[in-house]
Length: 384
Image (cartoon, rainbow, N blue to C red):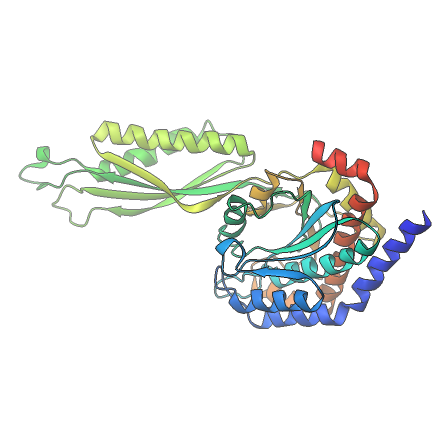
């Protein structure tokens, strides 16, 4: 027991000793926000920071220019990944708090890796770009970056604390109907009306909505439906997004929407194509063992849950479908300022938020330490 307490104290001491340096990185990321897939300066800053801390750093990870992996290793043992996100919002800087996420991931990796002189295992910080567009983690998953890791962890800033937020699946498709143009007054019978197909698709979806489980959403816009009133439109384009709480049900709804489009195409005689215009962010599958560990550690720091929160969607959901993950929300805005607002942007760099960064580092690192300390917990987590 004494050894465990000693290691916990070491982790906390390392976090405290790195406070000013990590908060300097946090401020630097905040001052130079970069949008999705353009995070060149941010990725370089973090990579250099971790290299100076003795990590082996791989940049241009899996061919993704602004992704990286920083690792410390001592033989075979638990493999823990802390997630760093660092893309900003277009026109609104780090109003989603990704400078805070990156700083916590970096600090947690540094603090937990301090035990590797005693424990066997591996600690990594994986830099995942473009969370706001959902491009980062799905690409890195596809290229095997997370293969072999036992757990992935991060904390997302928020106006309230919620360890298991409701994070739902979202995906978007473009539907393209191709018909045949003809003079609408003289020979409409020679045409195939793509606008009619667009209208039928919308009507089919409106009919479908009544039979959908509560919380499911289908919303979209018409991108193209003809250019002249006296010509039968030969091209119709519709962009739709679909959201659902459960991943399996999301997949089911996507297929139903496709059938709505297929029916519209058959009814009008149009040809139909469809494709995803954005990556699909899958629903978040919170690992209960990790959640229990995290919650216990968090409460030791005097931080408690406020209420259930619906966050929206994130590509962390994709990662949670293949390995144990947690994506808790923690209050960072002292007066309840909401994400993606100017008010949160301002609140995210004040002393309260900076203190939360250090708390978050300690909570993440100590959650990871439990997996090094207790092989039975690691086994239960992976079995789940």
